Image 1: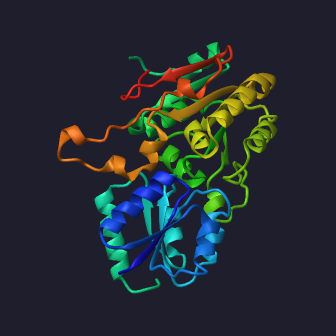
Image 2: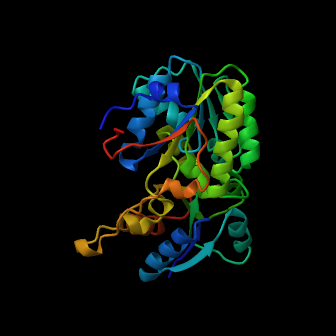
Length: 121
Length: 207
């Protein structure tokens, strides 16, 4: 079964997404911020990272530069322009941009689609 | 319910805190920006990126030539150099630093400060920081610079904004998760200063 790493400084989001995805049979790891995520990647090799775009600590732009060969989907409460969203999606490993608050069924569907696609983009 | 006339509110108060519902958030921020657009305005955004905000204002025919932005988001997601009309700051900036940044900019004869939004400040830094921020900004900086302030805050609580469970459509109405509303008077534990008013905008965007 595939492994997903949920990175969010909000415990409610981490716990909820973990619970939902575990019910679908995924193995779910959690990290509290970008630095915690990078530390975890020394030992774990998830298939997908759900990464909150606004967290304390290392800016997300610097976090994603250090991640190799793992799909990343952004979770974002802030609003970007469509052009900015497309620019973000052009970056290596970035496969999706999910706006908060999100519909849970839609999240599950998008995770399924991402994990069924080939690695890399 | 009457339409918000923000300039009138600011004639009578140094600052107004507008409590908005998420459903009409964009409508109200556009309306306020439009009403203030003939005077030099400093717009601080922690809610939308500079590009997203400019795009929103443009499609709604708001003239932005008098607006200078402080963007607390973009730097987190991409490298950004300051522009003539925008200063990009670190999203994790301490409240004291943020206050200093705003204070510096307001030295340049601004009539209005718009802060979007207290909710984001509350989420990342807590109620104490919000209270400190507001009181310092209004009592010291805005008064000193003869500038009026508008502060947006979201009615729905942090849980609604962040918790995806709130979006689950329950088939059984009795299990429907209600949108929790945040009582901002709980956030401001001490009395608001004279010259500050809280305006609760209804779910239809009127006060």
